[in-house]
Image (tube, rainbow, N blue to C red):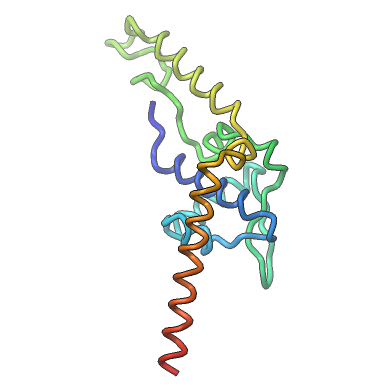
Length: 161
């Protein structure tokens, strides 16, 4: 299976957005700071997520992004599909030309595995991830770390003034 950084980052960013959605639109710079994903990369991902109807942008002061549907209606597989990520365990991209132009002996096994992985991820919603205790603990730690960085920057600016 080829789940690359693009798919992982898209799911991570969407989960961050879902966790912080109750406080209004979430800026990509906030997600970037908490998750360590470059802002330009997030902009590319969110462009695809918006085109696929998973997020909506909010313009103006205090703007950012919000989920386009409830967190219990957005599945991990949709996010991965939206950023054109392949969940394919075959080496032939499902073409069936893996062995000199024909299907290899295990071609259908890898097709079945790919389908099982996709079905598994289709069964996981953002809400189900948010409800996991370990996810909440990590989000709380990230929020605290982010707040500490902001405080340090503000204290440094005050000291320089």
